[in-house]
Length: 50
Image: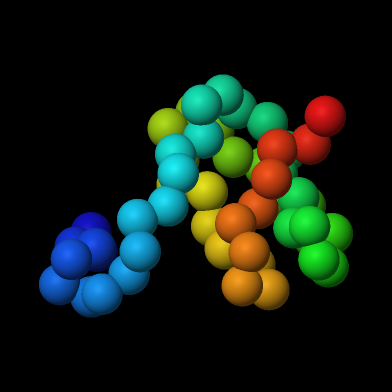
């Protein structure tokens, strides 16, 4: 488990519900389950698909 403060990472959001998340820049799609950390892609946080 990564300790955010020790590694210097900025905290990111947790997925509020299961679903597909898309990168706003390269449009890569990733399926996340509820409670998983939403990753960054191309320097931006991935966004939930409508």
